[in-house]
Image (cartoon, rainbow, N blue to C red; front, side):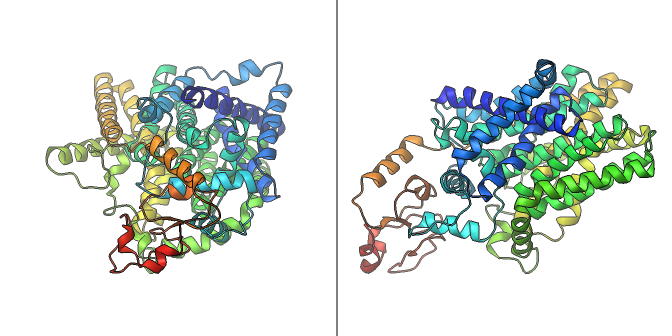
Length: 567
């Protein structure tokens, strides 16, 4: 089962993504280069999957639809599909990133997921993916439980479900594998596709194949991004992929005569970001569009106004049409989230979330010489981290300046939008939401820094190689610390919990006084009251109150009447 989850599932996802990328390029009459086919296709899959569930479908429909469309892409490209999907050296970037992100799972010797009881997001994600697979995006009726309350509360809040729909469909293709077994490989796959896109972009900027592959893998190895993946943040990783694919597609648009089809593909990528990240992706879309327009007007191939207007109209239409199935949810959730996560007047519990303090901007450099990115560094570790962050900042700035001077942006296309959004939006958001923006910024900064070292090496070989060596070593060491502190889920314990829930007498409301975020998932088919959870139908009624968030409750600490209501 473990090997199938780590090998078969990725192979299936890669094939489906490649087929969808081929199909999108064929329809748009703008075939992407081989190294961008699969990364683009995964974004297209998000756009294709969500409408199925919005129309009342389930994974039984979503899985075959994605599979058929992928096969159609290969059929339409049957005379050249081998050449169209052979990415060359960027596949090495994919492999390195995939193995890096999956290493804590593989080296544990058994399929599992990471971030156990660290943040509630992973458990919530799996509950929602499981629900979408079986019921679409319909509310769950006729059941009183923590799980049901969570599902209905999430859907009523109009939470963006694009990525949940995509994973529900992809998992449906290999439905004999547990969802829990493919969750972490899916995150690692997203990182691998982002690495491919960054590697291709580096190649477009002049880096040799091997160097470009290393730059792509290094970009997604950025420590804060790696750490977030290690506690199950798959939405943030998906937006990293959107940024990488968008930057690469922008470079392709600049390299060739402006084609409306290429801009339409960029619009599909932007739409995927909106369906996954709601209105929080809107600023990235807007700034990317402005950066691309500025690069077109400042470049050596300035398009005629009529050509530019037609391409802009096609791109805007592609974003609007592709995002339309989730547009009302995007706007509704965005309005509430803007208030909820605001720096002033926002919800008090959302200011820090799981953080211990606001994260410093230096963490965007991809280096943090400690296993816990939330704590301040002191002494030699703190000094070394600051110095390496300063080096990364200088290299990234040098890359941007050099590219603007040559009027051939690559790193600039990736890092400028992410940095501008972080600096502007970060002043309006609390530390928890700002940290998510840093997760998206960090791979772009590392990519720009690596490109800066590459550009430096072409002028001063040994200085560039030394700078690259310091950056690679520091990020590798940072990720090693993160690997050491990863929290793999105790699968056997949780399977025992699931078994106990299934064997409990029916009917009746089961009581789970233990602080266990996964009780609502493992016992999702039963009516269960996870008493310490905020979505509990009957919150813990204590004889003597104490803050029980994150803590277990003994039965003798509950009032007898409360305990008697549950089994």
